[in-house]
Image (cartoon, rainbow, N blue to C red):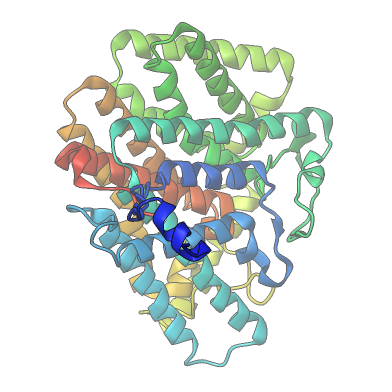
Length: 452
C-alpha cells in the first residue's frame, strides 16, 4: 500500500513555474495638470488667508509652488525623467534672480536685524523658491503646443474667478471672500473693501484692488487671443464672455495702474492686428465706455480724472518723495541691499514702486536681476513670434509680449513682490513664454514632462 503522502505526490499536478508579474511602465504626471491645480488655489482661494506661523509666505498657493520646485529638482536627478532638454533661457533668468536674492540674504546677515526682519528674510526665500518652481516647471514641462493652449485657456478661466468676485463686491459692497477660506487658515491683512470717490474698490480674491487690476490687465491679452482664434461657435461665445468679464471688472478696481496697464497692452497688440480688427476693437471699446457710463454713472469719469492728475495729486507727490530716501539708503548698501523682503513698512516706510524696493532690498545686482526677469518675458515672446510659422502662434506670442509689457509698467506703480497673486502670475507667464519659445525654436520633442 502506498502512503497518503506518496499518493499525493503521484496525483499532484506538475509543477509550473510562477509567472513573473508584468510591470506596467510608469506614467508621467502631466505638469499642465499640476499647474492647473495650482491655478485653482491661486485664483479661487482668497490670497490673504495663510498658514498662521508662516505669514505672507504661508499662503496655500506659495506652498504648492515650493512643492513644484522640489518636484522639478528631483526630476533632474534621473536621466530618464529630467526636464532639462535643449536650450531654455528661463533657467538662466531664474538662477540669476535666485542668486541675487541669496546674495542679499547673506548681506542682510552682516547687519543687525530685528526678529521681525529676520523672519521676513527667511520667509522671502520661501517665496522665491515658489516663484522659481512655477517658472521652471512651466517652461520645461509643457510638452507640446496643445498642452500649452490648454494651460493658456485655464489661466484665463482662473482669472475670470477674481473678476466675477470683484463685480459682486463692487455692486453689493459685501466682502464675500470671508466665506471662501479653508478651515485652519488665518487672515493676513484686513478683509474690508476699500473705497474711492464713492465707489467700492473690490479686490476679488487678490489682496488689494491694485493687484487685482494689474493681474486682470496681464491676463486680458491671453483671453483676447483665445476668443479671436476659437473655431467652435459655442465655445467662442463663452470665451468672449470671459473677455467681457475681465475687461469690465478691470476699471471697477478704480486703479490707475490697472487702466494704464490696459492701455499698455493695447498699444502692444493693436499695431499687429488686421485693420478690420483694430476698427472693431475701437468701436467695441467706445460702445463699452458708453454702456458703463449709463449703467455706472461716474465710474469712467473718476478713472479718467485719476489719470489726468498724475504728478499733481497727493498720491503722486508722496511716491516721488520716496526717491531721496531710497537714494540715501541705497548708497549705504549699493550692491546687494539690506536683504530681500526686509524693508518692512511697519519699520521703515511704504514704497509703492518695485524697482525702488528691489534697489533697497537687493541692491543694484538685485535690480538688474529684476529687470532681466521682466525683460526676458518680452524678449522671449518676440523671438517666439519671429520663429513661429503660423499666424495664430505669432498672435499668442504677441499677447505674451503684451502681458510682459503690463508687468514692466505695473511694477513701477506698486511694490508687486509684496502681493502674492501678481508675483505668482508673472512668474507663471514667464514660464509660459519660455515654453512657447522652446517649442517654436526646438520643437515639441525637445522636452519631456517631469516624472512623479
